[in-house]
Amino acid sequence: MDNLGFLFAANAVVWGGIIYYVYTIRQRNRALEKDLELLKETLNRKG
Amino acid sequence: MNPDAVEENQEEGNILVWLTGLAFLAAMIAIFIYVPTERTEGVIQRIMYFHVPSAWLSFFAFFVVFICSILFLWKKEREWDIYAQASAEIGVIFCSLVLVTGPIWARPIWGAWWVWDARLTSTLILWIIYVAYLMLRTQCDAGSMRARYAAVLGIVGFLNIPFIHFSVLWWRTFHPQPKVITNEGIGKGMDPTMLATLGVSLCAFTLLYFLLMGVRVRQENLKDEIDRLKKEKLYSS
Image (cartoon, rainbow over all chains, first blue to last red; front, side, top):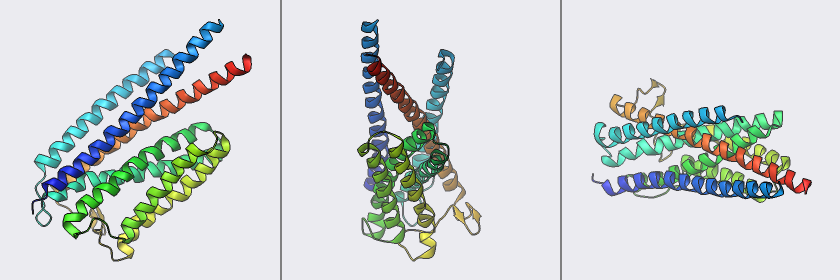
């Protein structure tokens, strides 16, 4: 039985899902870094 | 947190990244090169090495949610709520992968993408429960009530997992019976090379779970710290 297409589709789905999740974590990290920078700036301005 | 502890954490994180990477490389080699093709199903059976570890990871993640939710309700410490939240998120991601890879495997073997049998339906219900858990966390205002509601849902949701496991034994289902843990013993129902490949894949997915958990927990702690500083600044001005 030749079902290579299905096998690669499943493989792609798993890797795609993992990569997408890592990407969303990275985006959240960036948002937090931005937040932290903003907070630092505000605190510095306040002295 | 002192700078030495941060550096130590980063070092541990780097080791885990390398270990996970190597484990996945070994798993890919085993899945696509080492393991022989199964006689009845052919190459499509190799989906099992993604499908089963994804299911294992999601069940393990929901088990962590269950334990951390109990600990949160008992000790009322935010730390347990963070662990539960991070684990639920990872569990939902991998449960989604189970629900997608399953039909891709089923289509050429059963001739249908989906059948409403006990195993498939109960897994879908599990996924819906934990999606609701994550939605509850985003919809309610932050605070101990949100964490408490989420903890209750996290505990109730886990009760579905034993049902999922035994569903293929209690009812006649399309889904195959367990092959790893059988009445004859662990791994007796499988070829040793297949069992070894599945073992490597399970290790890789488990390492990935701990890696993702570490990152998400650190992120949530940082978010809490930023929120605390913002509030302090707000009240002081």
